[in-house]
Length: 81
Image (cartoon, rainbow, N blue to C red; front, side, top):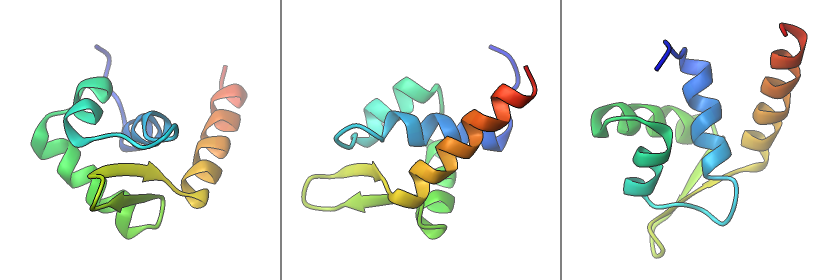
């Protein structure tokens, strides 16, 4: 796998959590991150309001701000192609 920047990993996490929410283990599996990595990135995303954690369901969900980030990320990718 090629090197991924923080921004790439953020986008990956937000994209995977954008459906109906996702549990931690599946999120790690689908984003190819270790437990230590995912915990670090989840904290950053939650602290910045891009991701929310639903305790009763133990699900991570992308917020409106997270969807805005994903849209800008996609636009940026198109510009550099």
